[in-house]
Image (cartoon, rainbow, N blue to C red; front, top):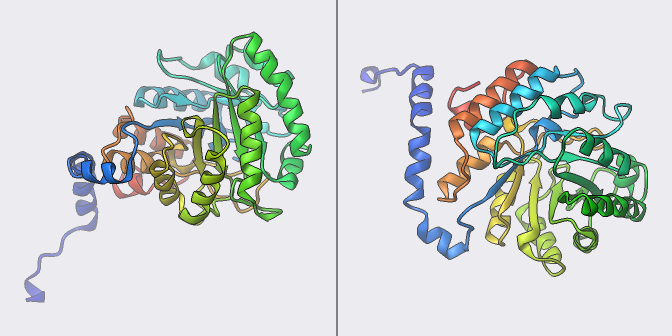
Length: 337
C-alpha cells in the first residue's frame, strides 16, 4: 500500500491551503454562534495596529521614511481602523522615530481611520499637533524600575508629567489614549501585582484618557495571570475603556487575548507580521501578529472590518523591506512570505 501512495509536493499543498484559508476562516463563523453566546464574546473588535511605531522602533537599521509611509498606507487600505503612526520622542533615545514629521505629513489619511502618535511629554505633544496629529497616546508603567529605565522617572513622576499633556490635549480637543506597560511581569522586578496595574490604569483614566491599553511588555503572561490582572483592573474602571497589548514571547498571546475577549474587552493591539520588541526590555519578542489575531477573530465570528489578504500584503511588504521572515503563523502557512 505504501508504494502506491501518491507523493504530494509540499509547496503545492501549502499553496492550495493558502488559497483556502479565507474559506476556512469564513466557514468557521457559521459554527461559532453557540460558542460566542456561551462565552459572551464581543460581536466586533477594534484592532489597533502598532506596527509602524511599536513594531519598528527597535530596529537597529533605520527604516526608510518612504517605506514607513507605504506601510501605513497599505494598512489603511486593509481596513484597520486605528494605526499608531509614529512617536514624538527625542531621536537621541529612539533614533528610528527621528522622521516623525515627515511620516505624518507623507501618509494618505483615509477617512474613518485614526492615526495616533506617541507623546511622552508636553514638548512631544506640541510637536505632534504641529505635524498634524489629531490623536495622541501617553505611556506609563506598573513597574518602578521599568519606568525609570524607559522614561527616566518614577511611576508617580510620570503620571504628574502626563497631567500637563492631558490638560493641553483637553484644551485642543485631542483624544488621548493611555498605555500601561509590564502589566503581568517586568524584566527588572519580576512578577507585577495586579493592584499596581489597577492603580496606574485608574489614574490615567481619571486624568482623561479615553482608553487604557494594558501591555504584557515581555510576553510572560498566561491566561491565569491575565485573568487576575483584568479582574483587578475591572474593579476600578469599565471594561469598555480597556484594550490589551500582548507580546508573544512565550507563545501565549492569542490565548491571553481570548481570555480578555471572554472578560468583555473588545479592543486589541497588534503588530503586522509580529514586528516589535522593546528597547528597554531585553529578551522581549515582537507583538502578536495582526494577521494571526484577525484570523482568530474571524474564525470566532467576530467582526473586525479588516481584509486579511490586504493585511498580509502589508506584512509581506515590510518584511521584504527589513529582509526578514514574517513572525505571523497565518502568513507563514499561506505562503505570503
